[in-house]
Amino acid sequence: MIFKHNKLPFNNIRLSTKLIITYVLLTCIPMALLGSVMYNQYSKSIEVQVGEYIPQLLSQANANIENEIKKLENIPELIYSSGEVMEVLRYNYDQNKSTLLQGQYIVQSYLTNIYLNSNNPDVLGAFILSKNRLFASTRTPFEGFGFKDGSFPYKKDIAEVGNMEILLPDQINLTFKNKPPYILLVKQLTDLDNRKNLGTLYVAVNVTFFEKYLEDLLRKENTTMWLMDKQGKVIYHTNDEEIGKKVEEINEYPLLNGSFSATINGKSTLISLNEAKELPWILGHSIPIKNLTEQTDHVRNVAIFIFIVVICITTIISIFVAWTVTRPIKQLSSLMKDVEMGNFDVEVPIHSSDEVGMLALSFRTMLIKIRELIQKNYLIKLRQRNAELYALQSQINPHFMYNTLETIGMAVEEGEQDQAVRMITVLGRMMRFSISNKDSLVSISSEVQHIHDYLNIQKFRFEDRLSFRIHEGVDSSKYYTPKFILQPIIENAIKYGLEKRKEIMIEIEVVEEEGAILFIIRDNGPGIDEQTMVTLRKSLSSDPMNSRDSGFGMINVDARIAMIFGENYGLELKSEVNKGTEVVLRIPNTLEPKER
Image 1 (spheres, rainbow, N blue to C red):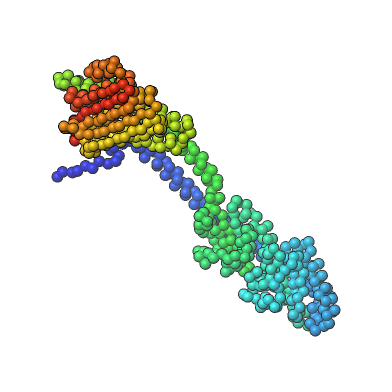
Image 2 (cartoon, rainbow, N blue to C red):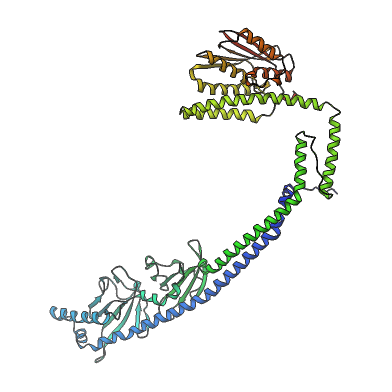
């Protein structure tokens, strides 16, 4: 049975990286997981403890509030001590207006003195409803207390505390100025002499007095507390804007006495509730769990800092160990890359006798054998020929780049930004052409497009002084040509032509003739004198490697064509003084560049 082994991505990673990854997997990750688990468990334990403690405080707060309300039970008894008030309350509603007004003044003054004095700062107002008469004394204006607005009978069942009843704001249509939260204490007034009902006393108490019982619960930052009835209507809230609204989630709460976690505004929050035993409401408390674990977070942050320091130190150690192990291998790999690039004269050092030393010894032996084989054949001559070809091409590129960048620089200096952008775009295309194809042969269409871009850049520079025309008489995408054979010719035509001419015209034709492709470049420049022509023809037949000046671009082009295709191909030069110059490049009609 044959098993196929599929390579894992881990196999393609460098050895030093593998060592570091292994260290991270075996040390950093377990330490991080352990710290994370311990932090989460500790945070949960704090949440459970606080969740048990806060409901106890809420229950105590509810009991304190209930006791405070019971203290108000004795206040209504003071009415019985005023004979004038009792006499007014015994009046019938059919008395004359003057008597009624006088009685109203007596009762309201009494209510003010008894209920709105400095000893009762939390009392918003006191009302007595007797025989269709309303006696009211309040600290601020009020609305909605009476018969016409439907305040009576009450909308819901009334809760009782001691011998008093309690009304919540949603049970009666009564509002004070600025809408302070309140509860309404209700007690029936009875004539003790004849046991007749004299009316009902209502005392409105501002529920903000609750806050003194909630101070311990509000010490934590971002803590929220509220008081709501059993239907979710908010009676009191630490945020005044929430008073009067309804807590819609009350029906979804898992319990009304205890604590539970919930998500509020995207934050994990601990909610604690306590349902009062005698009072008709539920006291609520909420705090983001993050606030409960502030101290834990501080410890966590310190631990993380220490963890990072330890990790950095141990990582540096692991990197050093990995480097010590892999350095000889990297050196050997670098030598192998040199050999891959054709340098077989490298010296392979052997620093140890371990597995890496044995590998280096084997590699050194292999190099010795390769050098012996290379010396027995003609590969040295072939590599020298290729080196000469690429050296000739490198002589052309700097000449082209210098003139192109100079043209763009002039455009920028003259403030022609749009033109500079177009020139840079064209230059980018030329640069892509220069570096995208490493082959010595390219399609004629690519070479012509390249020279078209070059002439466009020069056109930007010289404007009306330069004009050109390109004609392709062959299928330029079908045939191939050496790279950069037109640019040096065009450079010389522009350079020497514009030195003595105000305007110059360059024509380029690509034609097929007897199995060859001809590039014909004509210009109407000053031409070349006979002495210079003799010198150029002599140079064309010399060794091009001796000519390093950029002015000998034509010589380099001729040499490249001859070295690639043979002596039957190359450059022909014709020129007459004051009439212009014609350069003809002859290459074979090559169809498949890979065959060359």
